[in-house]
Image (cartoon, rainbow, N blue to C red; front, top):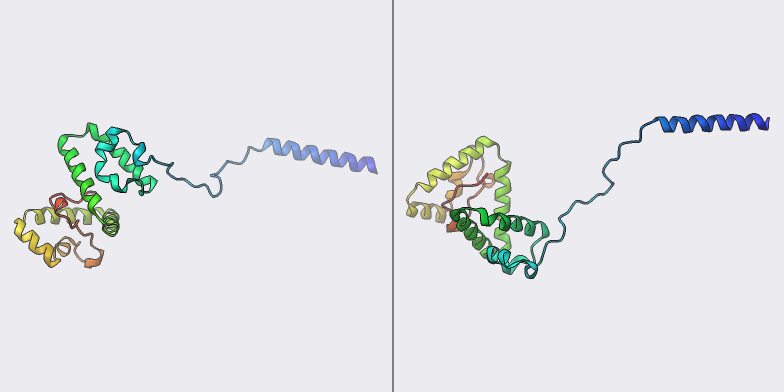
Length: 181
């Protein structure tokens, strides 16, 4: 009887081992709780002189920036030498403007940009056309509309409340540029 049990156990074990070897291994999924992040980015003092020259308007805030934002700016600095002079001037002006903004203003600009990018393409196009029409107004008329708070209403998509419409940047240096997609 003991021999039968031992034989039955060996047969079962052989069957299980054979069955396990015949099945392909389960596909490996992503590790549980995998965190994807930006590796640490250099502090201001660790940037090379060329990067420091290009990113100079951001020097004051650089070390306090989140790693992913530093990485974005470093990507711009890498592409900067290959840009046309007009594009370089535009980037420098935007960095200077960004450097002058308060954290609250920066958050508002980021929210506005995110909201604009979430609009359907038809609404984006309508806003771009309204922006071009706004830029064709005389400077005095644009100033009057900004001061009255009506420029945002002019750019609001039709049928949308003013609160949901992306607002153009409030600083004068970006008023002559179209919203970016």
